[in-house]
Image 1: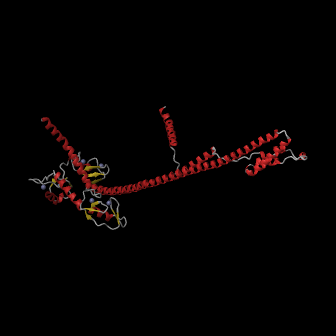
Image 2: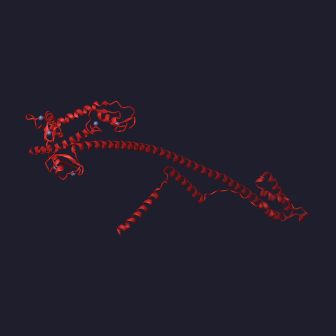
Image 3: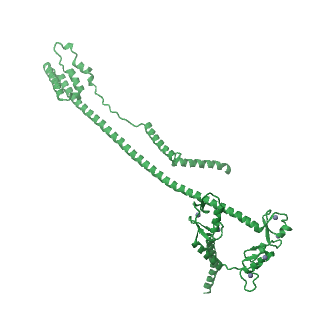
Length: 443
Ligand SMILES: [Zn+2]
Ligand SMILES: [Zn+2]
Ligand SMILES: [Zn+2]
Ligand SMILES: [Zn+2]
Ligand SMILES: [Zn+2]
Ligand SMILES: [Zn+2]
C-alpha cells in the first residue's frame, strides 16, 4: 500500500513538468498563430483580406500608405493583388480568440512584481524605474513621472531583479551602447573605464534604431518568402505539366508501338501468304509439266516397242505393212491427242512418217538419220523463278529498323536511349576508372 502511494507520488512528480511543458509549447504555438506578420506582435484589431491573411488594422494601413508600388494593393504575406483598396473588415472571430487568450494568460501568470511604493496591499507594478531601481503601480508611476527631475528616468517592463541590468565592474545601470566594442556599458565605463572616448549611444536610441532596421529586414524576409512561395507554385505547375505531358507522351508511344506491331503482323502475314500463293502457282506448273512429260514418255515407250518390233520383222512385206500401220496410227493419234501439248513427240514422228519410196530411196535421207538429227527431241525446260533472302538483305533490314527506333529516341530524348547492356558496360567502365584512380592512393 505504501509502495503504491509512493509510486503515485513519483508519477505525479514526474508527470507534472512534462504536462506543463506540453501545455507551454501548445500555448507558444497558439501565440505564434496570433502574431501579425508585419509587427510580429499579437494582433491589435485584426482585419482580414480576401486572400485569408490577417493583419493589425494599423499595420496594413501603414504598409499600404508608405508603399509606392504602383496603383495596386497587395497582401504583404502572399502578394495577392487587389486593384481597388480592399475594405478592411474586422475579424471578429480572431478578436474574440485573442481576447480569450490574453485573459487566460493574465489568469495563468499573475504579476509577481508589486509596487514598491504601496505600503498596504501593494498593487501590481506596471513599470520598473531603472534609475530609482523600484517597481511602480499605475498610481505611483503617475506621481513618479510628474516630478521634472524624474521625467527622463528609464522605465522598463516590471522586473524583480536589476542585477543583470547593472555593470559588473561599476555596479551601475547599463544605459549605453559602445559602437566601437559592440557592448552594453554603464556611464562609468565611458567616463573613467575602458570605453573612454569611444563612440557611444543611449541604449534606448540604439534600441529604436535597431528595431527600425529589424522591421526593414523583416519586410525583406517576407518578400523573400513570397518569392520562394511564387517559385514553389511555379515549380508545382511545372510538376503538374510534367506529369501530364509524360502521360500524353507515354500514350502516344504506346499507340505508335501498337500500330507498328499491327503493321508488322499484317506485313508478315501478307508476305507469308504471297510466298505460299507463289509456291502453289509454281508447284502446279511443275506438276503439270511432270504430267506432260509422263504422257510423252509413255507415248515414246510405246513407239519404241513398236519400232523395235518392226525392226525385228524379217519379212519385207510385213515390215512395209507394219510400217504403214504404225505411221497411220500415229497420224490418227495426232488428231485424237493434243498435238500442241506434245510437239516434240509428233514433230519427231511427222519427220519420220514419209515411207521410203521404191526406186527413189537413195535420193531421200534415211528416216533413221532424220530422227537422230531432229532438234525436237530436246525437252523444253520449265523456268521457275525462286527468290531467297541473303544475309546482306537480312542485316540491312535489321539495321534500317534499328535506325528508325534510334531516330524515335533522338526525337523524344534528344539522344539515343542506351540499352541496359550499354549502361552496364558504362558502369563497369566507370568502376574500372575509379579503381585505377584509387590505386596510387592505396600503394
Ligand atoms: Zn501588426
Ligand atoms: Zn494574403
Ligand atoms: Zn503603488
Ligand atoms: Zn525613477
Ligand atoms: Zn561600467
Ligand atoms: Zn567601448
